[in-house]
Length: 168
Ligand code: ADP
Image 1: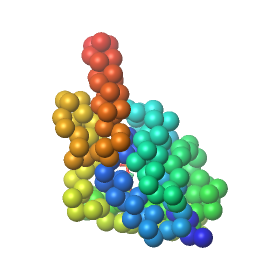
Image 2: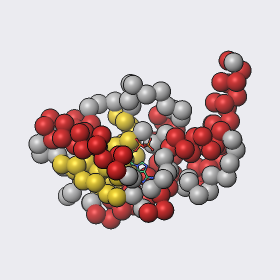
Image 3: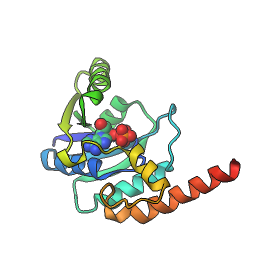
């Protein structure tokens, strides 16, 4: 069994992430898509909702499991018997940070390697932060998000924006 972990914030999961998940699922026997709880970042969408969004847009893939973890990535990967960490690369700007993290993770755990998949060419510009910005202005999200989650993303962004405005 070749088991891989695809970690990220997925705040929220986009069509770019979905494309990487589909391709990873075709390469590996099992893929754990993991919402990593990052204490340095304050996410817009709660952890459980981010996991649920991933579940809904990967329901057609029976070797994909969505979950969350606040553990160190290599420890989480080991706990799932994964030997591969999958990362998506959009542009050269992603490279430096990802290269550093891959090196650090290999230092910590030499049995786990990082594999990079280049972004689908129609999604190289796409990030969760762009989607959040578009959603805030009620833009059409169909080019960016899996159909299944659009209404819930819009509703949650609307609530967040409303409560931010109320706080002033
Ligand atoms: P973001 O930068 O959008 O907040 P995440 O932390 O959720 O991203 O990203 C998780 C992983 O998915 C990272 O490896 C990131 O490079 C990759 N990724 C993000 N957006 C895309 C995309 N549009 N196409 C391919 N890979 C992506």
